[in-house]
Length: 568
Image (cartoon, rainbow, N blue to C red; front, side, top):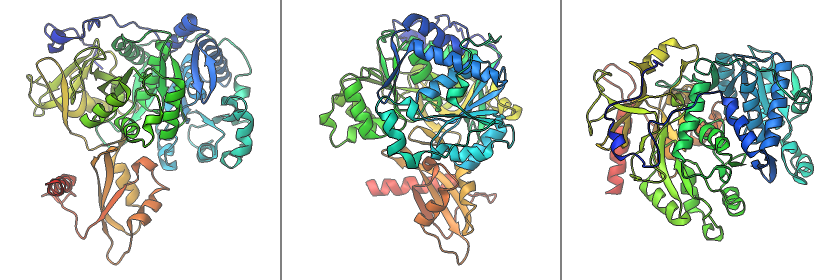
């Protein structure tokens, strides 16, 4: 990214900026490990993580990070090498993340729901050398056969039982025996306990924050092929500080953040983990989204901050026994990942009394770029104002260069210290996305006279389903593997609960027979659950463009017309 100044003479948002937040505030430098180290020094005896009742203080987490960093270094892991995290939300994620970057390595986040072929692609593309996972069959059994293929040399296996409080730690191996993997420990498969059993103070590592990569966050970018967004230490430290400035209403050392969003997702990595740690908050981590568990956790643990996606807020609004739970501890919520419907916002605020605002970002911007004020003018339907030090521009769709006036529709572009260094080993896509000193998002929007931005369309075809990016090409490639399929098109269609849901339009080979349920069952071996089409429409013909390409645009136009007729 070009090092252009984000200072400007008359940015429109400065006229109505939040009074207690300085857009010009200096953004401190430093490295990602500094975020945790500072909070350990300030909040050492305060709770840092609560995982299903097991609590760790900041001092305890800091010590475990140091010991694991020593363990990584003893394995030869150092600057520039890639350490993968194949983990759900749990203390091991936080510890391994900060241990890896403290050893100078690059963290590669993996979705535990990925299908085998998706994991293999990311392992190969990133060159991940060591992977940290749990002793659960659903995780370990997927990746154990991959050790020794490509760059992957070792697994570090953490015991789920050891992360639990007494007596759950004793009961888990008995009651959940069927869920446990038959872990084969050898020279390439190491237990976490052994890894942290050596030194307590890792060797110092020289890091250039503006150059050295801290995280490879995989995303589709402007096409459907997953690519690793290279987020430097400076990117992540900057976005942590920008987000903490936006949370000026938070009280350092006093907040509790509910972490049900998966930490491997860039939104949760930043707004739950790094910003939460920066504020000295207690991270209340849940390993997966279970609405009953979420409700019970809010009632019992009393979180004060609750970043989430619209799907989660919708589920809380619709919970049949919502009145049984006290939700009033929640003070502030940021919604991201997908558009926040007005009715979802209104119902959630009514049910909790909290302040719920919508923000915007993407993996390539570490991720947060804009947000509605937590203490100021919250304009529903917009993604708010640029964070401190961030310049948002609406650029002409025709020439990709000219900034447009207020109210005009164009591509949303970002400049600021949180913008990625580029895509890993992909100079062509980097050049297409980072142009003229701007990050081109692929989203179409408008900016009003006060600097509030509204997203109105998307250039790219990605589907936003419950806050996750689903790439149609990836789903289509999996569908095409079925021998009965001749042609298919995948698109996102509106869904009240998920924002969008995945729909497949399929033409079968002449004489072939296939049902929706049969295709979905087939795809379970090839796709993660969020990617499997919930709706399959079989057609004799699929529409094509004038040059003969299958037309997703025409199918979506038909879908919109059908919905309009049904609502009339």
